[in-house]
Length: 543
Image (cartoon, helix red, strand yellow):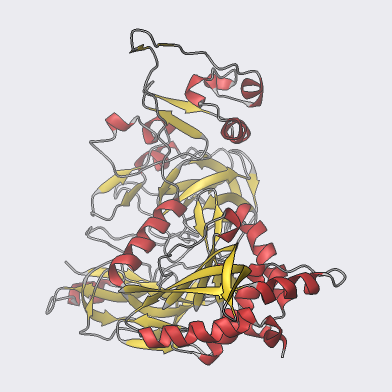
């Protein structure tokens, strides 16, 4: 069955998009994950990938043309399939149907795909706000916090909530004015894009039926009903086997299967418990509805367990916690699995002499108000080497290879939920101190979930450094569509041979993972030789 693809909302403020380029033409075969087009938003030009497979049967917006979010962008279906009915039925209204035959109207809602039952009309002035698509890969979102409460007045432009996506936690502003009449998701709960988020309208309006009858269509074209009952939308796992349509996970709830009940905990208490190594299933909450709060963690005394060693009869209890996968963790799993099994990886290992680099850093940091790390030096050296080896600075697409003339280096940063890759743009043109300041700023933002999409997009090469954890060598998975990623180990003091003599030395091991579709072995080796020159003689980076 044909799939109607609409103009996506690729940023939180995007209202319309322009097709910069089509990467597929009518008649081409499209696989799930293929890049359909490059869409210019109000913030950046972003790649838009297909979530469907089939033949590109129709293009609704030509290159250079602009249309509103949710307007017809393309149609994908079976070869030779009749789509005249879809074309004749499409108007300036937004129409998006995965596999369902019901149409969905825009209703001037900030988020797309609002659908109510056919027999119900929205009360006058009432607006249904759905979970927005705040990134190009976002499939579901989690409400990190509400900045408005039910009954509060909402002005256009007010921040309604903070939404956790697969990439970052972002502020979501209201495009309507009125009173917040209903909240469809509580803090910590998750739902798919286009699920009921909130209802805004005139004060005192009864919207219970609107919330009860709101429907969305999931990826399998079966309808899910989001009710205004929190307990119904967050059922225990065993009761969700029948209807796994709207999956909710909570950043402030922990489910313990050993007790078969949910544990309600405040974010602060949860953080304190993690720091102290306390199992939340053993803590009795004194807050509302048994919610665990700060004082419960402060006053908690762990129960002792004994084991009868003499008779080998253990009295301990097997126990474990289940933590729902965050949106970021699921996105990391999806993207890395795709990269590992689609890009033919191979690995090049080198070991650099770090004596000059250590002396250079010590002398550089002796300058007033100056402090650089070895990682900053590696970023700069890679940037300069990439300018000389554009093949390593390339990106692979199904129908072409892009040799980038600019150098944007992604620096992997570990965060509690996984890994993010902020991008130091035009790194070859920046000084060591500028690179150091940028990386430090991005690392702080990453830990506080304040990185913007623009700060995490556009990398042409990636560096992952585990040297500070004492790891001597490791391999990484390529951050697609990049062609290579460099894994940096620790500096190790060891005996080395110089001028035929064994002397004390300091070395560092690096491993570069390459995509064999774009980077041949000799090309990768030549890049590492150039990099070796900069690292072992860092003063050449300043020339």
